[in-house]
Amino acid sequence: MIKVVERAPAAPSDDFTGPAWDVNKDGEVNIFDMILVSKDLGKPIDEANPRADVNGDGVINILDLTTVANNMGE
Ligand SMILES: [Ca+2]
Ligand SMILES: [Ca+2]
Image (cartoon, rainbow, N blue to C red; front, side, top):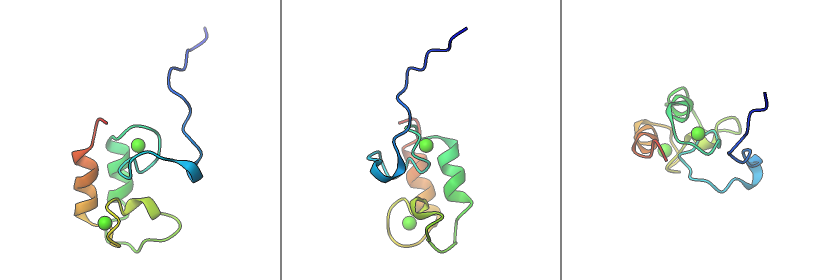
């Protein structure tokens, strides 16, 4: 049985134009984005986790986590 895919595939990372709080760039804001931010809380921002700093203030902290939380379900 063929499963119909209704959503477009995720855009390549380089030209992703979705919101900053869609941390994993899959087109949905959910618990997985929160996990990505929470696992990098307090860590320096580098090439591995540039999107974990959701609000772009240079640190990964609870504010980034709450920004994702406030936009969940988008
Ligand atoms: Ca996501
Ligand atoms: Ca931040």
